[in-house]
Image (spheres, rainbow, N blue to C red):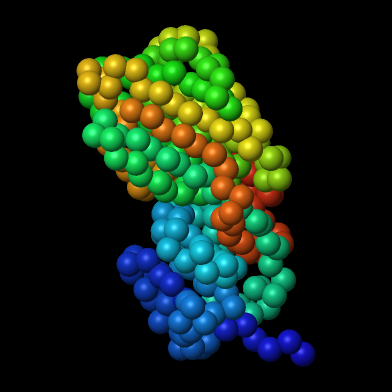
Length: 256
């Protein structure tokens, strides 16, 4: 008989999540995240993303339960049979995007994004961008409110709200999606191989400044942003077999 996994419970500040934390700790105890076999995350997708950024480098599988507003990356919450659910869970291995942003002041910032990297205008004036793919200029000028690059796991979030495509896990592609594109008016974005290096060049940054955000890490007044898949970083999310992430991505495409 396999020993029960050592679980570290992490909860958002929401009252329901804190109540669930107390219940689960009373039954299963609490491990330090650095000593755990599994991280059990209680909250919504926002708290899950913060957990992945903080503890992803530890390489510990993460099993989330929804106790927040949005829970696309979470399982349904129920406190019963937790060990059995974790043992039967299906793994989903995710690689984040690596963002490198250069500011007008000459500083360079690097961050990871498990959902998307987005560039947004900072003023009322539309942004002007040039888009390079693997060092080749593919779009000389995009006039827009912004643009984003989304992973398959993040394709149902901001990307989908911006009318981008939903991407199946394992498709080995990323989505390049404009936000309120004005010119070219009919450009709807592109599907790219996951190993494509995307570089955004901000045109006229003094008059039309832009910010760049990797999940929740924002950098303002950027002049150049490079996005690529990070093969050096990976996280493993665990999902109940009847409601795994692959199934959710498929089901999301048939919701009216």
